[in-house]
Amino acid sequence: MMEAPGFCRSPKHNLKRWVSALVSSHRSLFAVLWIAVFASVFLWQGIFPGGPVFRWRGDGNVGSVPGLPIPKLRDIVFNITDFGAVGDGVTVNTEAFERAVAIIEKLGRRGGGQLNVPPGRWLTAPFNLTSHMTLFLAEGAVILGIKDEKYWPLMPPLPSYGYGREHRGPRYGSLIHGQNLRDVIITGHNGTINGQGQIWWKKYRQKLLNHTRGPLIQIMWSSDIVLSNITLQDSPFWTFHPYDCKNVTVKNVTILNPIFEAPNTDGIDPDSCEDMVIEDCYISVGDDAIAIKSGWDQYGITYGRPSKNIHIRNLVVRSMVSAGVSIGSEMSGGVSNVTVENLLVWDSRRAVRIKTAPGRGGYVRDINYRNLTFHNVRVGIVIKTDYNEHPDEGYDPKALPMIEGITFTGVHGQGVRVPVRMHGSEEIPVRNVTFWDMSVGTTYKKKHVFQCAFVHGRVIGSVFPAPCDNLDRYDEGGNLVSESASQNVTDIDYDI
Ligand SMILES: *[C@@H]1O[C@H](CO)[C@@H](O)[C@H](O)[C@H]1NC(C)=O
Ligand SMILES: *[C@@H]1O[C@H](CO)[C@@H](O)[C@H](O)[C@H]1NC(C)=O
Ligand SMILES: *[C@@H]1O[C@H](CO)[C@@H](O)[C@H](O)[C@H]1NC(C)=O
Ligand SMILES: *[C@@H]1O[C@H](CO)[C@@H](O)[C@H](O)[C@H]1NC(C)=O
Ligand SMILES: *[C@@H]1O[C@H](CO)[C@@H](O)[C@H](O)[C@H]1NC(C)=O
Ligand SMILES: *[C@@H]1O[C@H](CO)[C@@H](O)[C@H](O)[C@H]1NC(C)=O
Ligand SMILES: *[C@@H]1O[C@H](CO)[C@@H](O)[C@H](O)[C@H]1NC(C)=O
Ligand SMILES: *[C@@H]1O[C@H](CO)[C@@H](O)[C@H](O)[C@H]1NC(C)=O
Ligand SMILES: *[C@@H]1O[C@H](CO)[C@@H](O)[C@H](O)[C@H]1NC(C)=O
Ligand SMILES: *[C@@H]1O[C@H](CO)[C@@H](O)[C@H](O)[C@H]1NC(C)=O
Ligand SMILES: *[C@@H]1O[C@H](CO)[C@@H](O)[C@H](O)[C@H]1NC(C)=O
Image 1 (cartoon, protein in one colour):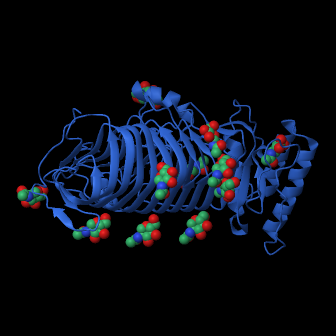
Image 2: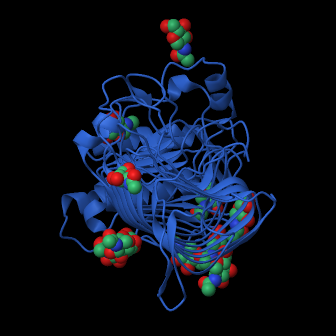
Image 3: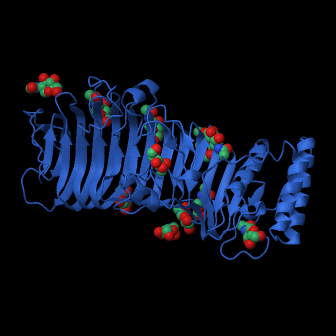
């Protein structure tokens, strides 16, 4: 484990070490002077906190900066090279990131700090973020996760999973991690955070890992988090995992993991989170592009924290293994008030899916899908109530989830094999489903491509392909045309 530098606790000692380290690593005299000047002002401020606010003109133009000038998003701006980092793809820069974060942590009351990462390949082991921090990745900047798992710290299981998810006991932490934070921004000129997941996927397949793989970015018990204008790539496991967070925005982010043989590389997994926006993103990954979750079986029921008030819009997503936007299968704390709109799912296995099982408990309710476009997907809309994957034998099979209030308005597309497969069961019926304005071109000339079982709800106006008999039919004016005779009839065919 790396030791935090504690710069402010014994400042003189550490400053000396820091400066001499810089000199010995052949930094220019100018950089040393700059840091000495900065550090003395910084110390002076620490001693006289009421003193005038120090403003570092961190416009990123120290030396010659190719490409776009870096905006100044906080009063105090650092460059990762100030901390001795080398962007050669070989030097391990963990200590540089940790020192930078430790200094920004001390600046919290003064508005925190911005850490610029210039073009280069900045190899690092996992490190923590701090509150009031902006991490800015310049164009051509790549933060690279170290491949050797011995550098990845182990952490206790998530309380709402009771379990490492893949293995019992502790799990690997994430490459970029944070707990109990406020006001964190990760942004840039489309710089990249690359987890170098290939080695992890391979070891996972070969069963060489004893602990659950780590996400690329995991932020826990935090609020006011923004990810924007960056690319996330090759995550070992889930890519961005906000856990029990509030007010999280993901905007204009590209997420790229291989579409095959990159197991469990979900794009974004809002987990027991509320007030979250995901917009203007392109996501192409090896599992669900988005999977909204809230804990697993008895552990999630006990933890009892729902995911709610989530708005997802203007996304282009691709998932050949799982689905574009999923809810579940871990949803034991409940999921409600989710809007998914202006979503294009292309060349994928499934477009949108709600998945759960007996034992989960919880609920999925008040879910609104608007303006969905499916382009070459095998199954469009899926509800699955027998996703029987449990943490251990301690789950309660009588803990039945509820699924109700699911509305689809404007579903279009082409090249879809099975536009709808809603597989409720006697134990877990699907209630109050509405379809309004749907026309999806199918590739399969079989009759029952709108499949239902234990589904209660309605279609309004024109819906193509012809809906299942489980649903009531209304005209555009809202007048009942025909009532369903058989909500419980099962017409599911997994062979199509
Ligand atoms: C960071 O420092 C390096 C080395 O001194 C310099 O080349 C680069 O331009 C700086 N980048 C920013 C964004 O300040
Ligand atoms: C990172 O944060 C976690 C959780 O707060 C903590 O357990 C761990 O020690 C921190 N790691 C470092 C290097 O500070
Ligand atoms: C998205 O990010 C790119 C760079 O990553 C930037 O050029 C573009 O202006 C951003 N678009 C929006 C809508 O923020
Ligand atoms: C950002 O970079 C990724 C990966 O190189 C690329 O696919 C994407 O188009 C870029 N986004 C913008 C807005 O330039
Ligand atoms: C997993 O555990 C086995 C047996 O204890 C050990 O030989 C192996 O090195 C461990 N693998 C990793 C990746 O820690
Ligand atoms: C949510 O977070 C953003 C970004 O930090 C912040 O600007 C905004 O004020 C926060 N909203 C609320 C309601 O706290
Ligand atoms: C992302 O880029 C857009 C366009 O340049 C800019 O308006 C926005 O402020 C950036 N986001 C962040 C969080 O810096
Ligand atoms: C549902 O979530 C949206 C944000 O996506 C929020 O504006 C709205 O107030 C929420 N509705 C309820 C009933 O909480
Ligand atoms: C529907 O979503 C598509 C993107 O999938 C977008 O181009 C279109 O403008 C949206 N339509 C409306 C009415 O918002
Ligand atoms: C059905 O769901 C819609 C929204 O999804 C909601 O407005 C309505 O109140 C629900 N109806 C019943 C009877 O629960
Ligand atoms: C249909 O199933 C539901 C619960 O799954 C049950 O309450 C209802 O009585 C059944 N209806 C018929 C007509 O069998």
